[in-house]
Image (cartoon, protein in one colour):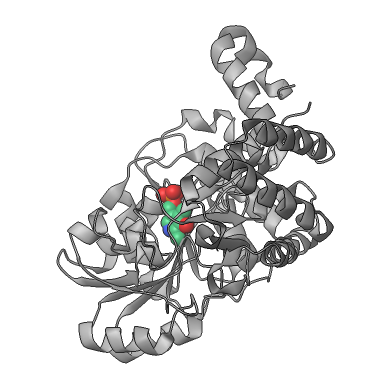
Length: 421
Ligand SMILES: *Cc1c(COP(=O)(O)O)cnc(C)c1O
């Protein structure tokens, strides 16, 4: 059944309401392992569905271009203050529409077109916006990319330093989308200092772990920090830029008027709600449980002969190279989805296959942990994954459907906010 706040939608637009309802059921019945996804709280859902969406607020609190900001200014200021205290930063901008525009704002604030940026290569676990060739950041800037070591699957900080000394980047990004190991912010900071580069930590994936004390914080090491709000942080779809006082003005000007128009005030409200939730003891427990679940899942997959990039995980994310299982990432991901286990196919470092049909899958535990799944449940999930991969290799659709039915039965014990069966 859908949220009661959808009663009107069901009446006025039954087609869309029906699709939303079906998506709610899909999210309830599947084991969702995409590491960038989560289930937000009922309060966050409600905040995103408010009248705040009706208001234009170009500018910043106290300096707006439209009248009627008496209450919006308070919402945005609350969001900023809560995030400042959550992460212990001097400056916060909650207006970026999403993670990619937030990163673009960093370039606009501190680089000129053609300047050199250094980031982790996309196939190694970096993000498109860290200078990858198909992204605007790779087209408009000179980009140099660091990798992971083939044998260990980990970043070699000496190699990063060498590349930085040779290429003299003006901006260095650390962080990424498929990094199963702890990011050494301190080592990145010392390299940035040595070559006089600005260090930007992109903690989109791990922001919730940082907030909950389950991953070291970049604060004090990276003067500029970008993050999405909707991944482990468990807020609405959106992003934030955080910085020390020295970088505050340039970042604000880059977001508005540099890149964006009016902020999405309903999202800002939901960020405020999520930041308050993330400051609780409960959320600390959640963040640590994400990591405990990921370790348990990694152990169980290892025991079943799956090959994990870097051998395991320190955080919420596991990258699996399926070469040893004799199946490619895409057919495995499709079969697993049919079996009720949702994940994404992913390039693994030094992949010999093409990006659209790579060798790996990427999984993570933020969403299942929100539902209350615990380390004791992880061996069962690994067993289903193993069975589904074997079924896929035999093209055994019936076996996949049987697993899917078991998964549906299993997930009934783990409610999700905003939708009930
Ligand atoms: C998800 C992600 C982004 C981009 O976020 P979008 O909201 O999808 O634009 C940027 N950087 C990293 C490291 C991410 O994981």
